Image 1 (cartoon, rainbow, N blue to C red):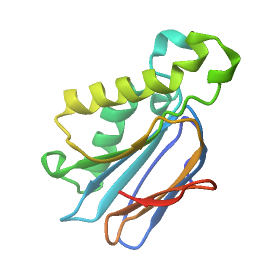
Image 2: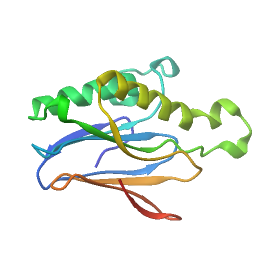
Image 3: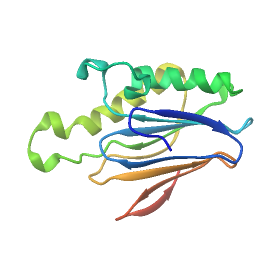
Image 4: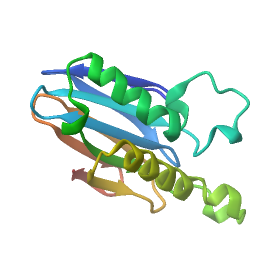
Length: 156
């Protein structure tokens, strides 16, 4: 189970799960050769938006490199990693505040930039819109599911 601003790395028959993504973005990285996978539940697009910067998985610019390094230590090859992105919804768009409403979009953009800097291609995505999601990453097969009450299961 991967909570807000947390991360996990495992391999084989493990399943990594994060529940209740709203404007947060979950990034799932996977090395198909070793079946090493990792997930980070990224909360905010930039460390400048938080006084508490102790958890690297809180932000894309620190969370992505941190996750890549932990996966490398577990046997993954960074050059083989592929990414899937889930979340980044505009959960508060009805409040009318553009800064609050755009947190999801900014999380998506910042995550994309961090993955690009790391040289990791995004091979699947279920982002944006106005509804929450949960994520299940099955490391034995590399299957990643984005689940929502209103929209069912999307396989990435």
